[in-house]
Length: 206
Image (cartoon, rainbow, N blue to C red; front, side, top):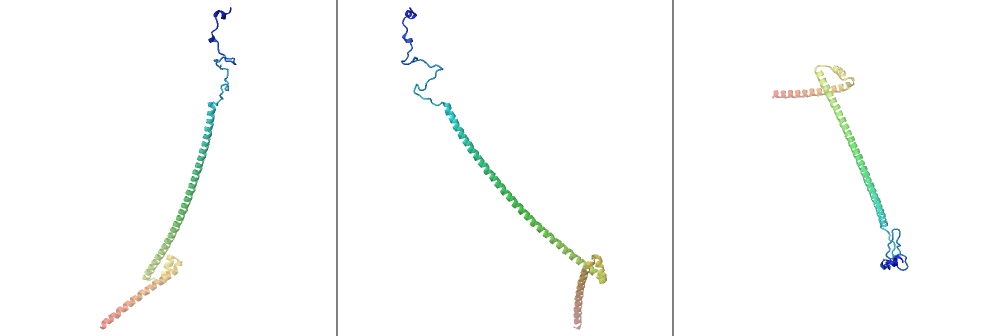
C-alpha cells in the first residue's frame, strides 16, 4: 500500500488548475528570465519616455541654435552699423577740423598782411617825419648862420661837412627857400614902413 492509500485521497484544492491546451497552470507567474509576448494580450509596444525626451531635446537644441544664430547676426549687424556711424562721425569731425584750420590760417594770413601794411605805413611816416625834422633843423641852422654873418659858401661848406656832399642840392634849395622867405619878409616890412611914412606926411599937411 502506498502513502496515498494510507493517507487518503488527495485534496482537490491542492491540485493546480491547468487550462486546456496549455502545459502551465492559470495562476502561474512569469519568472525573471521569461519575457512576456506583447502580442499575446493584443497590445503593441509603445515608444518609451526616453525617446520622447530625446526628440524634445533635439527640437530645443535646434531652436536654440537658430535663436543663437539670429542673435549673433543681429549683434553683428548692430556692430557694423555702430562702426559705420563712428566712421561717419569721425570723417565729419575731420572735415570740420580741416575747415577750421583753413579759416584760422586764412585769418592769420590776413592779420599778418594788415600788420605788415601798418608797419610799412608807420615806417614811411617815421621817414617823412625824420626828413621834415631834418629840413626844419637845416633851415633853422641856415637862419642862425646867416644871422651870424656867414656867407653862402661858408654855410654850404658847413652843411657838406655836417650832412655829406650828397645833400648839397638840398642845401641849395633850402637856402633858396630861406632867401625867398627873407626877401618876402623884407618887402613886407618895406611896404609897412612906406605906408607909415605916407600916413605921417598926410597928418603933417593937415
